[in-house]
Amino acid sequence: MSVLDEVLSANEAYAASFDKGGLALPPARGFAILTCMDARLDPAKYAGLSEGDAHVIRNAGGRASDDAIRSLVISYKLLGTSEWFVIHHTDCGMEFFTDEVITGLLANSLETAALGDDGFYDVGTGPGSDHGQHIDWLTISDQTQAVVDDVVRIKEHPLVPPRIPVHGFLYDVRTGRLIEVPVPSDESAA
Ligand SMILES: [Zn+2]
Image (cartoon, rainbow, N blue to C red):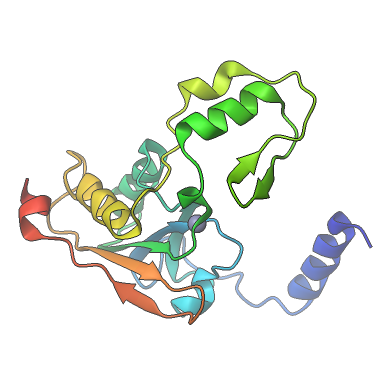
């Protein structure tokens, strides 16, 4: 069965017993989570969510990119969320390369790179593209600091009101546990 067939089959089973058609648009529990796209993370399970409960915004690293902040602002301004979580995780792929590395890999070819003991290396024959040098890939060099940086970036954004608590966490992929990352008040006030 192809991936497409698998997805459509799963959806058929889901829709057959679907009983969530009456949910309201605003998230019922009034909060939002910004987290990584990593396939090992299931926010519905690790945070106990059902359909209609909360906004979940995902990208590579769970970073507070301009687009993540766009979603968070819509989340509170139009849909009423009043508490946010930034949840990165251990063993994040965003720790394993730098802007220079991915830019170089893309310049070489558009094939999927391989991961060896010394990091990613390119196995394609090209041509690549230099478009990657225009992108801030928001890679991570320090797990804890990246959470702090993203919480602070969100709290300090001019479109984000100070009344919204922004909690920082690391999800441990070995235990499934959320570990709080304290954000120094001088950093959030800086
Ligand atoms: Zn990740």
